[in-house]
Image 1 (spheres, rainbow, N blue to C red):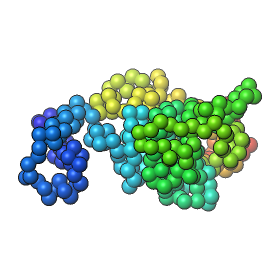
Image 2 (tube, rainbow, N blue to C red):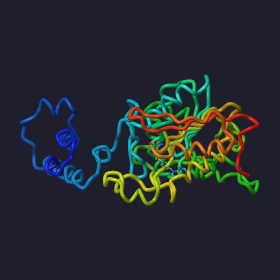
Image 3 (tube, helix red, strand yellow):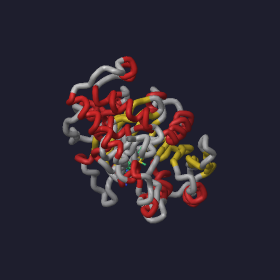
Length: 316
Ligand SMILES: C[S@@+](CC[C@H](N)C(=O)[O-])C[C@H]1O[C@@H](n2cnc3c(N)ncnc32)[C@H](O)[C@@H]1O
């Protein structure tokens, strides 16, 4: 049926879903072929294949996806991490100084921050997301990969949870979500939020050596035209970047210098046709060495920008 409907990876999908439905490993599914399946098992396989037929990806059905050689648990609020984002991780690992501090904006499953931390045991990080549900998944992923003690999660819009309020008040402590505590949350349990400020410094004073982000970058109109696997199952919040697809980059370019150490860097993933527009935003904000990095397919994929103290401006 999957083949008839034109699914490229039909045989592999069917094998993975059957293994998942029956609780078998890849080896077991290969060696126990031909064994009868009881009625409950057969029904479970049929249910999962039916979900695949509606366009849901295998990763969403089994609840995890591999990224940078690590398995990341998913939930309804997280984007599936994509292979093209691995380039951002490569560049991030190379850019961070010894003992460096990383900020990941719009962390989703935590894929970028966690992959960097796993490969750079000297680095500590903060990751933000607007979605509490995404942060719950990210917290479990951080614990699973042994980096929860070095990764703090904050809920809110882009840089907002790092600031004290513009009116001089403190950020609502209830809005904070900390990695190690999240790591202790049982897989399906409620989110535990500390009521005290557990950050090493007061918020608003923190500076990072590197800011990374794979923000939403698809225009609202194009989101409607995406393949059903993406449009109907990846969360809208992770995809839709407003009428021109640049809204998150405007905020990041305008605010990043305030949170960077002198000489610090920004790395953002971009859509294949956004190189010139996003470069212009960082140049206009006074960043130096603004460069477009191409992926293996030759497409513009990442913008890097260098914070030059005294030159880079921040929005007032
Ligand atoms: C394209 S997804 C990337 C997720 C993850 N970093 C990755 O690369 O797989 C964008 C993420 O930004 C988050 N997001 C959207 N709007 C946001 C906002 N205003 N502030 C913070 N995060 C936001 C979404 O919830 C989503 O997790």
